[in-house]
Every structure is written in structure tokens, then in C-alpha cells.
Length: 137
Image (cartoon, rainbow, N blue to C red; front, top):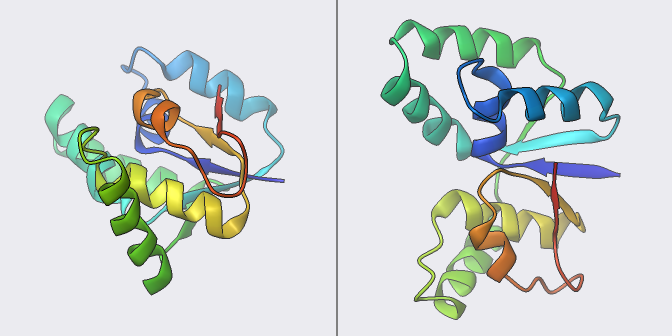
């Protein structure tokens, strides 16, 4: 089975000062599933590091990310079409690009679990391939 990781989870995993760091570490220590990170999440994650930490934290994150078992995945043209459809379906929710990308990837790759600490958008969304997305940890 495969998981998708949201920016909030990856940021917490690599930032020891984040309030969710311990929970992210506990989950990562026991997770044996392949973990995918959408490539569009990297700018959001590095923005969070720049917002909350010295600039050098971005480089540290990038070095540590490359050593991890996390796999980057890029959205396809079909995913981008689906992202636009999701935004049209939920206009008042104002889902951001990374969350919509995770939703589209979950549908295309038949993934039902997403690691996130930002649960609002994923709780609203109704995927095509399952009844709901299971939010972890």
C-alpha cells in the first residue's frame, strides 16, 4: 500500500520545533508503506521553513529529504485537469494547490490514505475512488 504526504506532515517530520514533530516521528518510525510527496509541496514546505527558521534550515531540510525514503511524484496533465475540477466543485472551500494535487493523485493512484496535520480540506473532499480519504496519523 502507498501513502501520500501533505506539506504539513513533511514539515513536522523534518522540523524538530514543530508542535506535531513527535507525532510525525512516531508515525514515520512504524510506517512501512511507500510514501509519496507531490513535488509541488516542496515550495510550500521550504516557505514554512523560511517563515519559522533561519534560511539555513531550508538547506538542511533539502539534504535530509534526499536521504529519506520519501519519493517525489509529479502531477500529470490529467491530474492538473482534475485539480481544476476539484477547485470548481468546492469553490467556497478555496482548497490550495498542494491539497488539490494530493486529492487528484490519490484518485489516479488509487491511494486512500494521506498523512496530514491540516485536516479541513481533506475532510470536505469526496474522492471518486473511495468513500473518503483516511487521514493519518
